[in-house]
Length: 143
Image 1 (cartoon, rainbow, N blue to C red):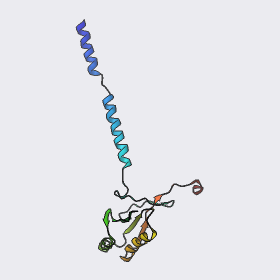
Image 2: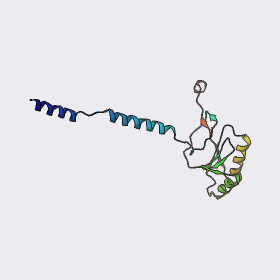
Image 3: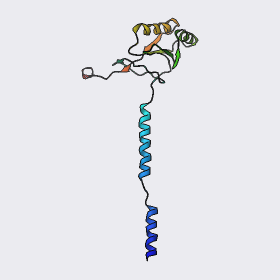
Image 4: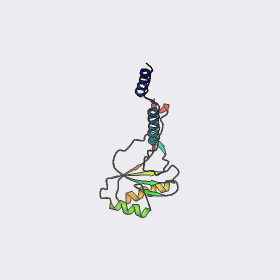
């Protein structure tokens, strides 16, 4: 009889699954995906603190971006560039109806933004946009 009891104990040990490792794996995956979603960059990693506007709307077309950082760096489509390089790159664009988005940090002087706009206008581009972040709407605006 003892023999049969030991066999039944071994059978119970085999059929019972320990869920702790599976819960650990699922929990780690959940943490990984939650953290990775927070690190999605909106503009390829160029750190620009945009001003806020309540009338901001997202743009869903392919376009050209000129980024101005608070440190004075210029970027043309995620690449560091000088004014001359930006001017040369804009000359090479054949479709002058392309949208030029200017993303300037909140602390960049107004004159620098105007210079970036002028670079595009001189090369014949007519569609310019200034990038902003969506401002939270107050209750006064929603009524």
